Image 1 (spheres, rainbow, N blue to C red):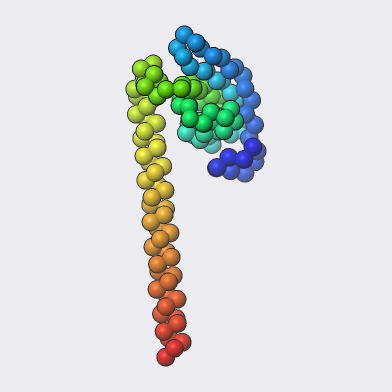
Image 2 (cartoon, rainbow, N blue to C red):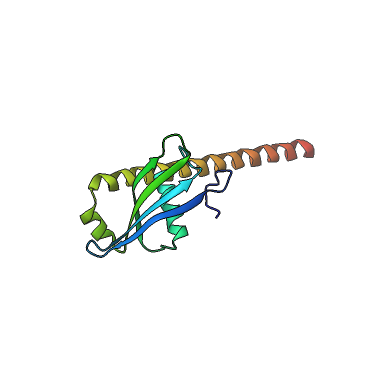
Length: 137
């Protein structure tokens, strides 16, 4: 299991419960993440669950991530919906606002990183051209 963010060692996802709640039209997944206590973020956990259970095209919402006391074990509860509008009807809007804030922060950090790398490459090119001009003289 390789995930986009490599934690330096392999984490194991152990499924505790996988329930189809037909009344609310959602799937409720409860999992343990071994070895990730204090290192796992909710969006990363949702991505891991999406890849593990092959839930592409569905809305995976992390409801709770709880670290076990004295262990490096995280227990997560996730709701999987087929439709985002149904999910917004059932789930508290503050959960969605928190997820949007973290997604915005991640996008902002990535934009800043690409901007910084673009500036560094521009500086390197300027230095290389200056060295080439010095050699030519």
